[in-house]
Length: 222
Ligand SMILES: C[S@@+](CC[C@H](N)C(=O)[O-])C[C@H]1O[C@@H](n2cnc3c(N)ncnc32)[C@H](O)[C@@H]1O
Image (cartoon, rainbow, N blue to C red; front, top):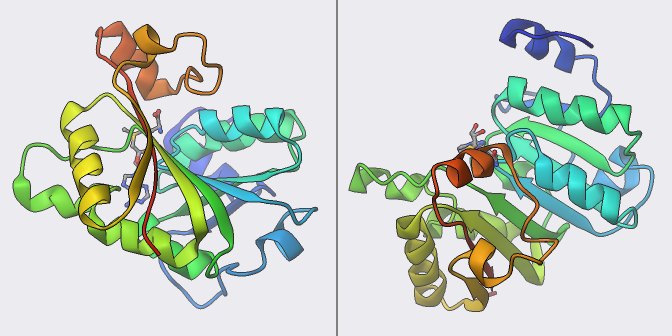
């Protein structure tokens, strides 16, 4: 479990009990509808962290809330490796990592199986207009979340990008959803908020570059 390079980490992941990998949709059945029953030891409310990278929110929230289950989702194995290794070392039985395309989430979770979603520092895709549909808060992705979220389930977004932030607000409003909370500058508006000030790897580098960190919570229309 001590692999340092990318190839070693990807190989390691195969033996990690808390990682499920589906980088291609192949024949083995994805665990939709079985997370509470077969994958986690206890059936309890499920939170996803999308674009989780090393899974800082997943790990931190799972430690605070042992009565909930957490799944970090990302494509990149070497990043997931770090979070999964820490979860194993800390014996966090309520944490799993799913290495898969977020585009395919509805293959991995059944309708209404997910209670809450965090999206932490997703790529803002600001250079080319044509890539806006790749943003994890575009209408295409909100429709995917609608298929797996419980009605009324909350989505949280943290981002350093003013463009992605406004795009998300506009998209939620145009698609009939509602904004629950908007924070334009976490570290000046609510520096004591112990949920919003959990820091991810990318967040730390944005803070070093003196960027503002924004937070939004919202519900989509059902
Ligand atoms: C900028 S990083 C943020 C990582 C982490 N949340 C953080 O704040 O340190 C964005 C992550 O999103 C993942 N990602 C982007 N698009 C994805 C997709 N369609 N499916 C799965 N992962 C994706 C990338 O692999 C990358 O790790």
